[in-house]
Image 1: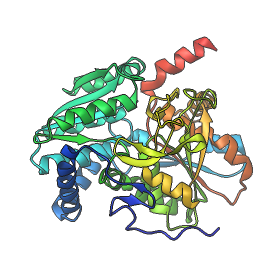
Image 2: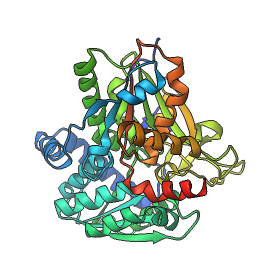
Image 3: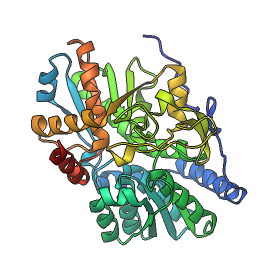
Image 4: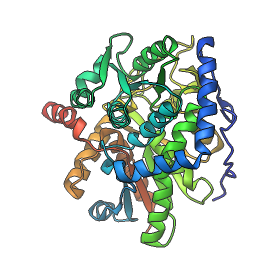
Amino acid sequence: MAYLKFDPNLGEDGYFGAYGGQFMPETLMGPLGELESAFREARDDEGFRAEFENLLRDFVGRPTALGHARKLSAHYGTAPIFLKREDLAHTGAHKINNALGQVLLARRMGKTRVIAETGAGQHGVATATACAHLGLTCCVYMGEVDMERQALNVYRMRLMGAEVRGVSSGSRTLKDAINEAIRDWVGSVESTHYVLGSVLGPHPYPLMVRTFHECIGREARAQILDACGRLPSHLVACVGGGSNAMGLFYAFLGDDVAMVGVEAGGTGTGPGEHAARFGTGRVGVLHGTRSVLLQDDAGNILPTHSVSAGLDYPSVGPEHAHYRDAGRITYARAGDDDALAAFHRLCQMEGILPALESSHALAHLDVLMPTLGADDLVVVNLSGRGDKDVSTVQASDSRA
C-alpha cells in the first residue's frame, strides 16, 4: 500500500496541513511564544533530555511491556495480537510521559505553579504526581460529571497534594474543564504553567505533547521487531484528543503499516449521543486550535457522550485531522456496549483490566480481525488500566 510521504517537520510551524494554529486571547500569545521557545531549547538540550529519559526509566518504569495476547488472538483465529502495555506505567496510563515532560519544562521556565484539566482523571493524577515528585504546586480542573464517575482518581489527585476544582458550567465534562483552566491561566501566567493533557490546543501544545509521548512508538517498534522480526501490519489505538494514538503512530508513519484510531461511538449517531468527530464533525476552532469538531449549523459546540470520560470531547487533535484527510490514518468508532464487552473480554481472556478508553480500541478488533490473515500482525495500544472504571462497569452490569 502506498502511503503519504512522512514529513518529520510537520507541525514545527504550528500547522498540520490545514489544521492547528494559535487562536487564543491576546494575553496568552506572549506566554505561548515563551513556551514555544522554552520547549525548543529544552528539546535540543542534552541535559534536559537526559533528565526526562531518566525519569521515564526510573520513575515511570519505561520501557513498558509489549506482550502477545495469546488467548485473545486465538479468540479471533486470524492474526497475532500484541498489546503495548501503557497501563503498566506509573500512575496507570500513558499520561505520565507528557506530564513529567511539561512539569520539567515548567520548572526550567521558573514557574512555581501548575494547572491542568482532566476528564477520566488519569492526566490529572499524572500531573499531580509529577508536581509532587518535582516540587511544584498543582491545581486540576475537572467537570462535576467526571468527578462523580471518576471519584477514585479525584481522591488520588488529592493524595498527591493537588487541589481539584469541580466545574459546574456547560456539560460539566472535559470541554468545560479546559475552559476553566484557560481562564485561570489568563490571570496567572507569570507564575503558572498550563499542562494541557492531549495533542490539542494552540501551538506548541500538539507538537509538544506528541513529542513527550513518542517513546511509546519508539519502544513498540523496537519490541515488535525483537519479538517477531518484522513490523506490524496494523496499529490500533483509541482517540479522544489523541495523545496515546499519536505517541504510538508517530514512529511508524514512514512505514508500510496501517493505522486505525477508534473514537467513541456512544449510544447512537445523534447530537449528544457520541463523540465521533470524524463521522459528522466539521472544521472549526475550539480551545485555540483549528481541527474537526462536533458543531451545529450556527457553529455552536454540540454535546457529546461516551461511557469513557477520557473520550468525551467534541474535538480532536489537529495532527489527527491532517492524517485523516491525507488518508494515512483511518478512523473508526466503537459504541458504549461494544467497549464494555471488550473490557470484559480482556479481563476474562488475558487477566488484564483495561481502561474504558482502551476498550474502544479493543472493541474495534471485532471489525478488523475477520479481515486479516495469518501473515498479518496487530499491535493495540492499551493506553491505561481500568481500576478507575470499575464502578462505571459495575453500574452498567447491574442495569443489564
